[in-house]
Structure formats: structure tokens, C-alpha cells
Amino acid sequence: MRCLGIDYGTRRIGLSYGDELGVATPLPAITDAAPEKRWAALVAVVKQRGATDLVLGYPLNMDDTAGPKAKEAEALAVRLRGALGLPVHLVDERLTSYEAESTIAKSRRREVRASGLIDSRAATLILQDFLDQKSPPPAVEETEPD
Image (cartoon, rainbow, N blue to C red):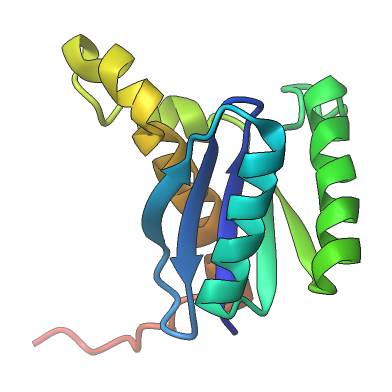
């Protein structure tokens, strides 16, 4: 399994990659201004990485309802499935951008946000959640105390 994690936004698309090893790694974000260029770049990354599964952040509201942003994610999932013929897994992304942003010094957040680094870190958190659910860590054997 080769997964591409996607944190979709109307300005930037954060990306990450993970495979059988179960570790998500951030990729450079797509920051093109034109929506059609962002789409073409996304399709190119999927093909370049040989992705077998797409993991798309699903921005549910805090009360578990699907608002306008979640509907956008659902529409993107349909478009991706149709164009690429790959499975698209929607993964709850609540608070991932907040968590990703918290790793950046406050004084640098504005400049870093435009680069897409925060978006790709959020995509990494989304993908890691998915990978962890697919293959939970091995059980630790209990040893008797000395």
C-alpha cells in the first residue's frame, strides 16, 4: 500500500506519503494560485508516487456534523475516485491544522503558513492516523519483574 495524505484547502493542498512501513512523511505542499493548476499538480504527485490509496482529511464540525468544508472534501473525493480510479479514504481531521501549527514558533507562523508547511504537517497527521488504524502497533509482551 502506498498512500498519499491530502489536507485540502482552497489556497494550499498539504501532502504526505506513507507505505507499508506505516510512517507518514510530509511532502511539499501544492501552493499554485489557480485551482486547475493545483488539480494538475495533485494528479501528477499521485502518479509520480504510484499511490494506491488516497487519504483525504475530512473536516467535520466539533459536533460531528458535516458542514460546507466537509461537503467540499466529499466532492473532491468523488472527483479523485472518478479521475484516478483509486480508493479515497475520508479521515477526521479535526484539530490537525491547529496541532501542526502549534509546532511552529508564533513569530514564524505567518511566513510558514504561505509555504504550505503547516498544511503538509496536517496531511502527515491525517495520514498517520489512517496508517495507525490500518496496522496498529504490535502488542508488547509482558515480562515478569526481576
